[in-house]
Length: 128
Image 1 (cartoon, rainbow, N blue to C red):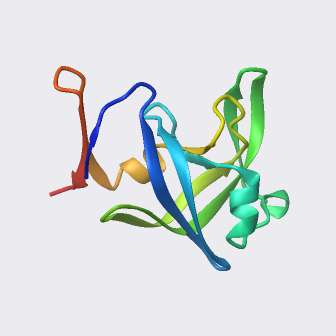
Image 2: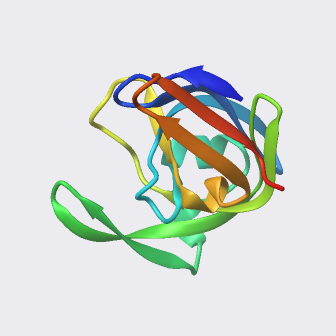
């Protein structure tokens, strides 16, 4: 997938799949985030209850470090790129309206990612 590079890097129409269905969301690409992050309501809509997850991960917020629930979603898809069994942290992203998550390394590790600021291009492709 190729996209025009803007700052922040917003990816539109990313599909998050779970046992109760699919939710399409807009996310910020975050190459510094170990985990992909989705909002609690997204997790609930696709069939997960973050409150009962026994797995937790520390995440840094504007208010300090918190422990966020960690779940494994069935699949994440952006265009033709798809990864299965992706670990995601559940935390609401309040900074930008309309953004319901961060696409982090737990998704990106499945692909080759090129961010070329000189040409203004983002390219994420299957590895190999």
